[in-house]
Image (tube, helix red, strand yellow):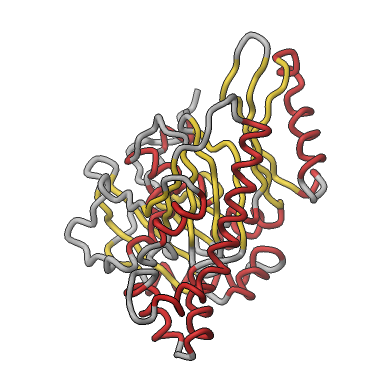
Length: 351
């Protein structure tokens, strides 16, 4: 059989969302970042690029790769993540006898729970558990136009895409490498434009969810509540947050509506997991990550709101930036998703 992939190649992670696009390459042996970069994008234009015409995405990729990279990107072999909120992921169980017609079972699940015709979707699935009577399947569906537009834009800048996955999968990969894998964990990834949520059970994502509330929503709320500029609001968010101080009540009042929206979505995801997927195992902890997680006191807030241990996780202990200029501590959480993506190996793709 012809070998399709050489494991010595470094896969470069490319994260695409409606707030920014990021790139990172990690040396697999040294676990060291050799190149990375970020480019802020216009949300409306990026949404159009993903759903209609990829021209804007192509232009952004060109600018990112030619003007915004710190270090070097070794080669043109890429793996890409796309916004989790634009994907549909589910885990379900079927009788073992259904395995020979598994594709039909997956398409039935899609037709029942995905509000887009299967003919317009790219669908992937795999068996993650089995016993003598049942098999457990995880599936993901993405609008085909989005996949086609991403591939067209990447082709326009001469990079080769070997895999595409939801962004929350990239985060989970890094979390699994650095956290206690025996605990059933709910991951809350707060980016600038959205919050993605997933239950990680036994090292596998079982269910996902998300809302269009993120770090930028927090900044806007503080600016409006306190009558300050966006720049000042951002500083209040990341330096004061919910910590005690003269402005604590006003900042808390500004942030609480957004936090309660996130908490409501967390409860919805946990409820679905408990009712449809869990075999008696309960979610044991909440890990908060992402560029919008840099609000002092946010872990304590969700601990009290959810009555469950919640904390901000910064799973960087397995990866370092070597001699490269590093992002500031304030901005480092922004790169967690793309770092998890860059940690994907050729062996994992082609096993």
